[in-house]
Amino acid sequence: MMSELGLVKILALVLAAALVGSGCGRKEAGDEPDEQPGPDADGEGDGLPAKGSDDPAPEPAGPDLVVDEPVNEAVADFKGFFAIDGAVRDRMLDLEASDQFYLGRYLDSYSRQRAFGLPELLGVETGNGVRSGFRNGKANAVNVVLWHLAVSGLAADVAKVCDAGSPDVGYQMRLSDSFVDILLPLCKQGDDVEIVAARDRLWDEVMAYDAPQEEKDAFLAAFGEDGELGTLSGEGGAPSVRGMMTAIMMNPHFLIRK
Image (tube, rainbow, N blue to C red; front, top):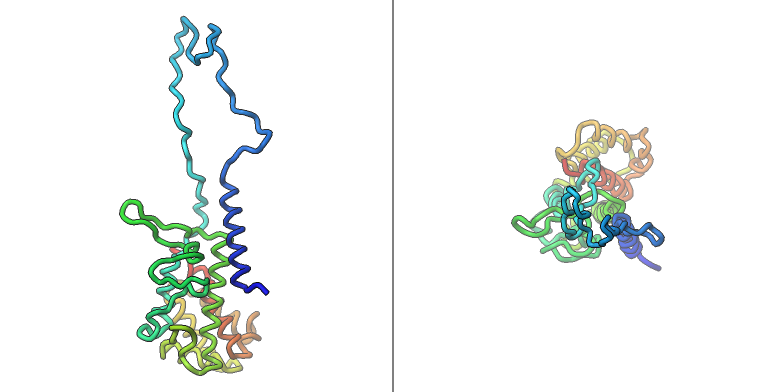
């Protein structure tokens, strides 16, 4: 059976091809041909004005002007792959024990020196000097799917702390002691004061100062006892932690540039 990653790779390629194809501007078969200059009034077909005419000679034809596709400025840029990779390392991990951690492995990429393969579609700096630029940062159907795949994979590894009781939750991935202290109460069932406080601290630790207070309030309400995701958080364990981690990291304020 094809893996989830394999299916997402195929989906990414198909959607990317569709996005490229939609802006090519090729003429379909049956389109009207371009108008060709006809013979002049003097019967000559050289494209020059008729004899005795005061009209200026036309400019010589040059190469077609290439115009970039218009950019929808309402679509925000992602912070970029390496920015999110760095945020995960700084906010959740023991840096000394996780120096080889790489978010790209959740997308089947293993080179920390540069984004290669699917991570390239999540926003990367390319080139150098005057030729440098930020590419693939605009949110679209492809990179949103890929971000969810990477984030949900990371969240599943973080949630392993509930079953293992150990900060070593993945390859070259050890959670910091302070982050483990936040997570362990969330592995329990119920909605007591300790769990509510831990949920509050989890948001602050992962999101930091990237989102306004109303976003935090909405998250706490959703995972609270009477919230739409209250049943999930009330059950505790790995599914609860995985759900909360995914919800925070897929929040636009975590991923999008401001």
